[in-house]
Picture 1 (tube, rainbow, N blue to C red):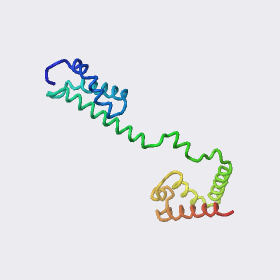
Picture 2 (spheres, helix red, strand yellow):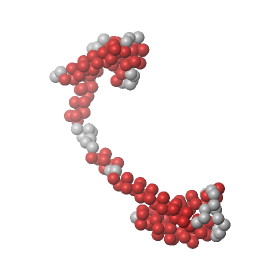
Picture 3 (spheres, rainbow, N blue to C red):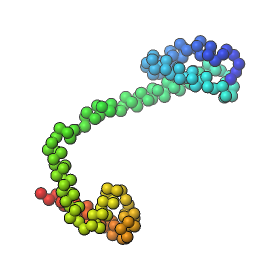
Picture 4 (cartoon, one colour):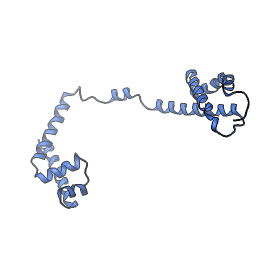
Length: 167
């Protein structure tokens, strides 16, 4: 960095102007002060960089970049709904005992359907749907062809769907 006034003195002399520069970008005096502080920390760490001909301009550039980044983050946060508001807008299953009972009944039917399948078919289905194995992995696990593994899972799925649709 070019020799001249000490860095801290330079920063302190321009601090208020830097805050005034950042404030219109971020629309908050407190946020602008935080940005200027962060800029100072980055600026003061630059002792190992090549000479900076105009340290004041460089400091302003750091402040501008940080303020623009902050403003972009704020815009993104403002376009995304608040997490609590989003959760409140979702329907709650807790308030709907009929839905809970219906889902439990459906699960019981699927379980009964799976239990009525031949062991190899049930195991292929569980390996695929519950454990996430691919057909090639299921085939190796059960010592069958990949085509047969696919067929067993398909058969089990159709059987479970039929159990659920039967009233």
